[in-house]
Structures are given as structure tokens and as C-alpha cells.
Length: 204
Image 1 (cartoon, rainbow, N blue to C red):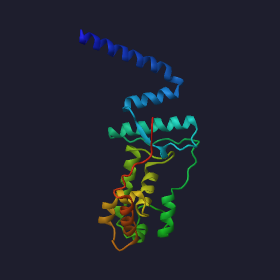
Image 2 (cartoon, rainbow, N blue to C red):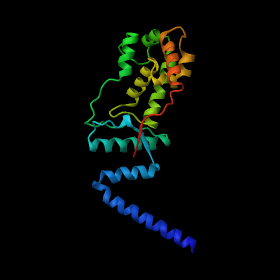
Image 3 (tube, one colour):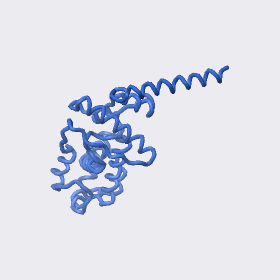
Image 4 (cartoon, rainbow, N blue to C red):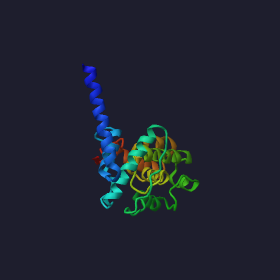
């Protein structure tokens, strides 16, 4: 009897999901709900990944792409999110700050940046890789690429941003302790501890 009831419940659930799928062709809200349903309940996304100036359509598109990226990453697949028209790109404040501090035009792993920061190219590359991984596993603001997100992470790490606390071990091992990048990282470590303070998130 119990088994019969269980089978009946499964059939009813499957039927309900099919009905939802029939309705979802032109219903963005239902599409988003289904993504959340399959990804698990109470899915939360950092609020900065969904800026207020996005149109309703672009906001839903961004949510779907973030969910897709996270899901594929768990299967070792890498999805680069598409552009959303209503978001206007602006240069990362960390990149702007890094250019001013180190007098370098491009904040990318290079000999020039290595000399300016006192950090090895290998350590700078490690930080960029971590930023790229975060792009896929967690997300990013709209209209970013894995590379741009990685370079912004690097800029934050060498200018006492929160990433400097997260990447402190890399900076400790890969940077000259008498140079500016490491001294700034030490300040960030005191300020942010491990860089794991709560990020404002929104449930979808």
C-alpha cells in the first residue's frame, strides 16, 4: 500500500512538472523557478552580480546564465556568460587603483608588473587562475569574461582589497616582503582576516 502511494505521488509530481514546462515557453519567472528547483532550494547569488540598473529581462537572463555556469562547473565544463545589453561596463576600481599605485598600464601577469609589485610572475598567474575559477563556480557581474574577472581579482590582491586576504598565502610565498604588494596584503589581512566576511546575497 505504501509503495503504491509513493508511485502515485511520483506520477503526480512528474505530471505537474510537465504542466509547468508547457507553460514556461513564454514565462521567464517559471524558467527561473525551474533553474532554482533543479539547482536546489534557497539558491543565493551575491547581490552585486545582479545590479539594479538591469532590465527585468536582462536580470532573468543573468540569473539563468549564472545557474547554468555553476551547474556545468560541477561537471568540469566551463561556460562563458553572454552579454546583457542593459548593463554598461565600467573599469574595475581595483584595476584603476593598481594602475595608480604601480604606474603600470596593464594589470596582467607580466615582467613589468612583477618588478613593480615584487611578486613573481608565477604567483600573479596563480591569483588570476583563482579569479577565473571563481567566475565559473560562483559568478561575476554582468558582461565579464573569465579573464577580466581574473585580472580584477589580481588587481584587488595587490592593492589591499579583500582578495589580498583570501590570496594571502600566495602573496606571502611569492612576493618580496619588503615591497609594496606584500605590505598592502598584510594590511588587508588585518582588516579582512581571511577575507570570508559575509557577502550580501539575494535568494532566487
